Amino acid sequence: MNHSIHSADRGTHLKIVVVALVAGIAVAAFGIAARTNADYSQTAQSTHVIKAGKPVAITSSGTSTVR
Image (cartoon, rainbow, N blue to C red; front, side, top):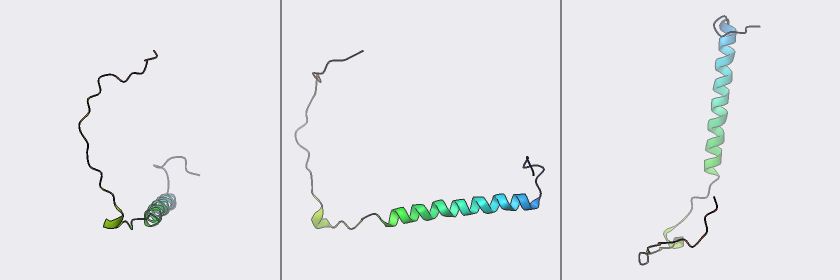
């Protein structure tokens, strides 16, 4: 068993590369699957427009501060 990456042979390095590649592909596949299941089917008819009202200045929140 190799306890150091410096003393590892070619087979050990190959195993590390393969495990990293498989893990990277699994993370990418999970991300793609999570994104494609989202519902992006909004249309212009289903959106609502919210207009800004008059500006408001708040000078005091009216809550007590606990320290």
